[in-house]
Image 1 (cartoon, rainbow, N blue to C red):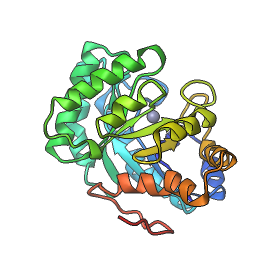
Image 2 (image 1 turned 90 degrees about the vertical axis):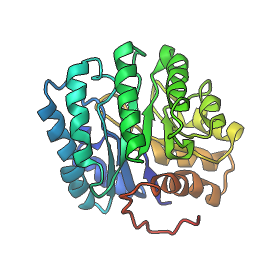
Image 3 (image 1 turned 180 degrees about the vertical axis):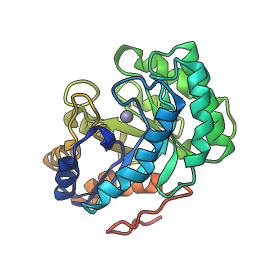
Length: 274
Ligand SMILES: [Zn+2]
C-alpha cells in the first residue's frame, strides 16, 4: 500500500529511516518547520534550517525514491522571543514559492501565551496575504482544548482564511469536532505515548468518518515512531476497513489537501480523482 506521511521531522531522523519508510510503501513526506530539540539563537540559524528543509532533505529523500515537501515558519515554542520571531518572519517569503514548499507551518500555540498568540497572528496574516496553505500545531495535553479554541478564534476572525486550505494537526477526541465542524482538515498524530495511538485514531475514524482527515507519525527528535503509518494501516485492516478506504485515508486525503499548494510538484504513483 502506497502512503504519505503528512507530518514528520526528517531533520531529526537518520538516513536509515528514509530506507525503512521507502520499503514500507511511503512515497512522500511533508516536513513542517518546528523546534529542533534546542532553541536557536539567531535568525541566521533559522535561515540555515530553512535551507536544510528545502535543499538538503529533498535530496536525501530522493535517494530512496521518497518525495520530500516542507512547510516554513517560526514555531510556537520559539515564538516566546518576539524580537527574534519577527526577524525570522521576514525570512519566510524567500522560501515560500520554492518547489515543494507547501505553505506556512506548523504555526500555532504551545503554552497559549500572549507572545505566542501575537506571532501566530502575524504568520496567519502572512499566509493569508500570500494565499498560502496553513498547517497548525495545537498544544499538547492539558492546554490542548483551550489552545485549539484560541487558534480557531484567530482563524475565524480573519475573513481571508478558507477552512479547506487549513490543516489543524494533533487533534484528539476532545478537539476533532471543533475543527471539523468549522470546515478545517484535521490530522491525528500517532505517538507511542502521548497524543493518540493507532487504535484511538481508528476509533476517531469510526466516529467521525473519512472526510478531511489524515494521520501522521510526527516523527521527530523525541520518543516517536517514523513507522507509525504502517501500524495505522494494519489497525484499519484489522477493524474491517477495505483497501479503497485505507488508500483514501493514507494517500488520497493528504494529496487532496496538499495539491492546493501553489508549488505542488508531486507526481504520485497512483492518480487521485477530484
Ligand atoms: Zn511537528
